[in-house]
Amino acid sequence: MKTPGASALPFDRNALPAYSGPGPESRAVSLNEIIENSRSIYGRLCGPKIFLEVNLQPNLDRTLDGVVDLNQLLSNLLLLAANTMPSGGFLVLWTSNVKCSEELLGQGQYVRVLIEIRRSAPNGTQPIRTLGDHKMQSLRALVRANVAECQGWFVECHETERRSLLEVLLPSVSLSSAESWAAA
Image (cartoon, rainbow, N blue to C red; front, side, top):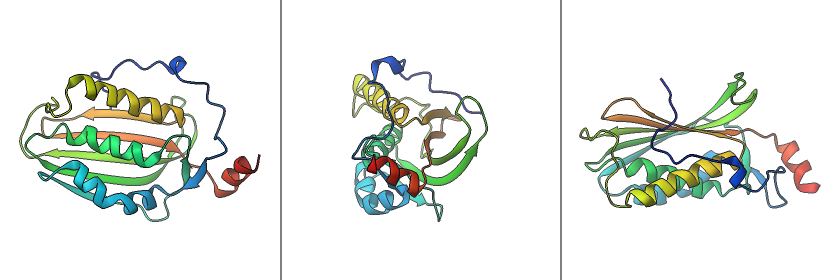
């Protein structure tokens, strides 16, 4: 069962600048390529007690980079996940294409990033104190704001003391629509 994270700061879309579509710097990119190019950095970011596994769907749809820095967004998601694992464990990063028909998200095709958190020891969902509560809340709020700016969706799901999920859905774009935005 998915439920939005109760510990997140309230998010106010009105606090963001109005979204008017992709900017001139936006380009259609493959999240798989971003992940592959930054895989070793992500592993170091997670720390020595955490093993990072990556499962990338072949032929992943493209999404826009430039609305927000997607590499930074992925780094922030991994940092959020790693900070809930004081005894270490496994992080599994998945990518996939999903089609949504729910009104809440808006009908359409999305690129899904799912981070499965498998803790070595139960600790509830309390973050370790490496970043401090205030910084973790700020980081969580930043992730929510970045995803919202991309017209996407962010969900935290705490299933057990040893397992949690972070999920992000970003709108897919065709290469032709991204090129027409860049030309405009």
